[in-house]
Length: 75
Image (cartoon, rainbow, N blue to C red; front, side, top):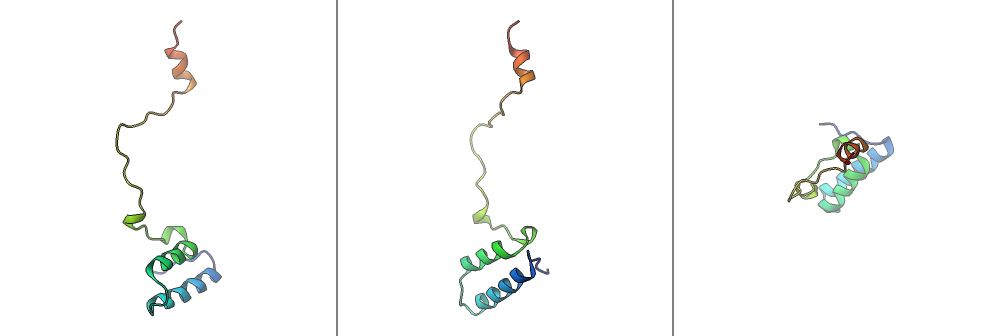
């Protein structure tokens, strides 16, 4: 898969960071920051630790709209 960069400059920065990561000069967390900052959003991987936890508990109903309020009001 070819990486899609936000710009040519950010592509060069990311490739440099990838080289530093490969030799161990920067850690995984810092490389993920470069991924977020340089790669186009569609190509940034989403890691399980970054996903929001599923919501628990009862579903929250959205507030009623004006039509529902008028129907519920006593005549």
